[in-house]
Image 1 (cartoon, rainbow, N blue to C red):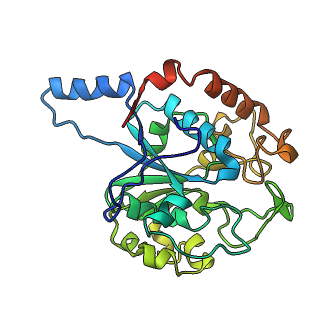
Image 2: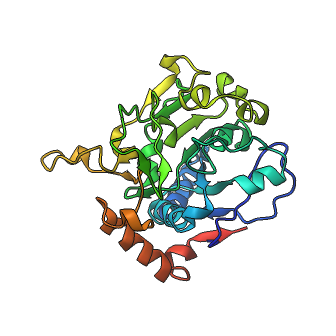
Length: 287
């Protein structure tokens, strides 16, 4: 796994990829496919494409997020960074950064269906996530009747700044777009071209205004568990987070080193650093 967040961006107009794609197929997924074939079944090849927002200020957060997904996945996945510098060099992103954009991927995230060639299902996720469960569980929630699926947060930030001092903005459907399953082939999502993403307002994009409300499916909050907002009920195992979102800032920032669930992230980070050449990364095929 590259320490600078490099990865290729697959898109129908993107030229030859210069960077590696991180791909992993675990033994259980391979065994399941082999069993299907031995039983004479036509095995359905499902490989989830995951696009992770990349910002150079949060390089380590990006690496740990990818690591947490890959080491727990029992299905084939591809992990790609949404990296603004790459998109600009390929002529896919050209809008100027506005004062309310807290990360480099504030708007480029909406290129996810385009980068997936408008085919199948793909996930976008912010880099400030830590996965504690197998991504296969999330894919089992996919419903083809929806154009997108996400956690329908009712969230109003308590602080006026976040991360390393950037301004905290408040708007309807805040954090809905921070983790999204896209039905990339859905006709409504074909509007998400570079031309539209580079020209539309933040309100239009972050509120999914190209869709009707009944086309936005809901996912349990544990898949986008907002630190400092969502709560765990010790008497209800269903409230335990499967994907922890350090939305106001994670322990890679000095100001947030003691935030809730900081210990889990630090443990994962230490394991990632120790395991760069270890068992978990040996499951990955680097192209």
